[in-house]
Image (cartoon, rainbow, N blue to C red):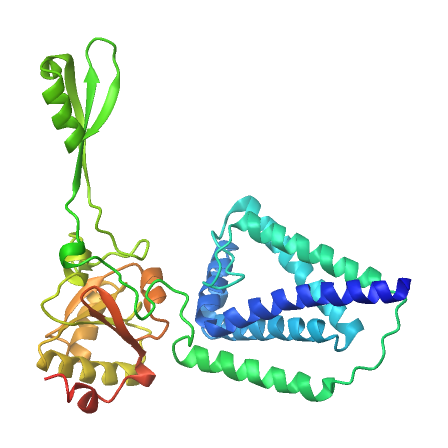
Length: 384
């Protein structure tokens, strides 16, 4: 009876532990570049950024290896394949990440570990305690299975293990070459990025006054201030103006994203994204020096064709003005305005370098890696 109970407990714990690892590995495999960028953040935080610079392919290879390893640990634990060796491997992996996330939680060197990609955001301390719970679950699995003899599984582990391995590896490689098939980022197709037309609200003005008699400091919005003047005829003499501020309630649905024309400081984000007079095609390349040459040739041809149809085309990059000038000349982009944005914000829009995102009336209509950019002639044939 005791052995049977232990088997039931072990099965439940394995299912929980395995499911977490399967999910974690899968959401990383959906977006390997997101994890690669997080690996770069960790290397930078621990003063090892030179490693990624010396071996540029290291982060993405490490990312694919990590997501496949997590997924397969989860599968093997979940189905009870290779019970003894996989428990040891799982203990080493979860032990390493527990220590790493503890250090991260204490020092806050990286603000988000990315353990569930962009699907679920956890704070550093939440990530650490999640790992502690997994440590405890794995410890109970070890304890429950110390003296239990399991019957040989009817499922062929020698067949399913390589099958699952090939599937997750192929999926991760595909996702790294093209855009993620499931988009957990703010710039998902169909998302309204900015309000347009009647949905836009006027800016809100606030004024701060100080009461001369009791020293009270109070902030009023425009409506409250008008009421004060109506209800208190002596407001102007009883209160003295301190400060004012204007709050623009029309914001972009992606934290930290802003557009400034190269060489200028004015934020033009709302004006560009909320423009309803024409469709917007936004070329993204976080670093023009690293942009694929073959990709840029395809993108520039597509962009010039879009311009002929009356659409608006801009290029968004985090590169310097000097590099942009050389880049402009190389790919004949003189009809396209260049805008500056933060490199992390650009990487959030599209993983491909370069890529194109189409905005229609403030909404994401479509987005493409340069590798799966539609044929310009067929795509625009019905647009004119």
